[in-house]
Image 1 (cartoon, helix red, strand yellow):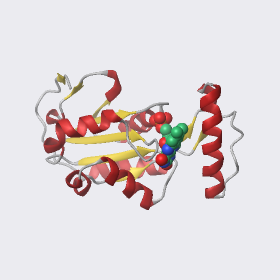
Image 2 (cartoon, protein in one colour; image 1 turned 60 degrees about the vertical axis):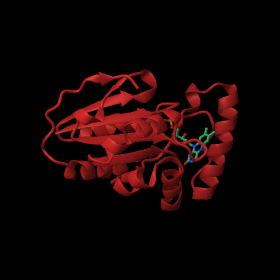
Image 3 (spheres, rainbow, N blue to C red; image 1 turned 180 degrees about the vertical axis):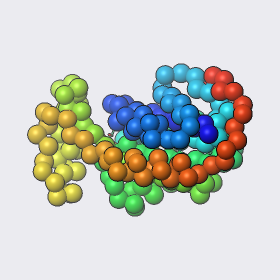
Image 4 (cartoon, rainbow, N blue to C red; image 1 turned 30 degrees about the vertical axis):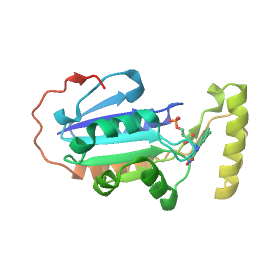
Length: 186
Ligand SMILES: Cc1cc2nc3c(=O)[nH]c(=O)nc-3n(C[C@H](O)[C@H](O)[C@H](O)COP(=O)(O)O)c2cc1C
């Protein structure tokens, strides 16, 4: 069983989620950053996972480009989608899907999960820290959790959700998949 995991990230949360998922999957899992250049065609894999951070309810452009390029192929394989983001409301998850993916991909994708988010305050520049402190405070207040101090990293990524996502992926798919993974310009 082979799995292609593609992700797009700004600050690294989506990458960490992708790598944790890969560790929990049966068989071979290849992890690729869509911003870093060519990735193998999904044709060479048994199942596909797409992961993106969310900014202003949107996934990154690279995710949209990947789905536009391989949309038909993605419909033929088990497909999971995860979001690295702070919201864990099902309503927001639906909104992130409908704003960023085609109806056919939305119907096909299973599981879909928001795995949590992070503000890496220790790595941000002054302006980013200012903006993220404001957002983190808003998030904390609306979720009834202590307001982050804006200096130490603030991480809500859920290991439980990552495990549940990976387990569902492990239950999906066939045992075929004989094509070679060949890098493909996109
Ligand atoms: C400007 C900005 C906009 C954001 N918009 C959203 C949002 O619409 N929904 C959400 O749940 N989280 C939102 N977040 C939180 C990010 O999704 C979260 O920090 C995530 O971990 C970023 O992933 P990355 O580290 O892979 O870039 C936002 C963060 C920033 C800084």
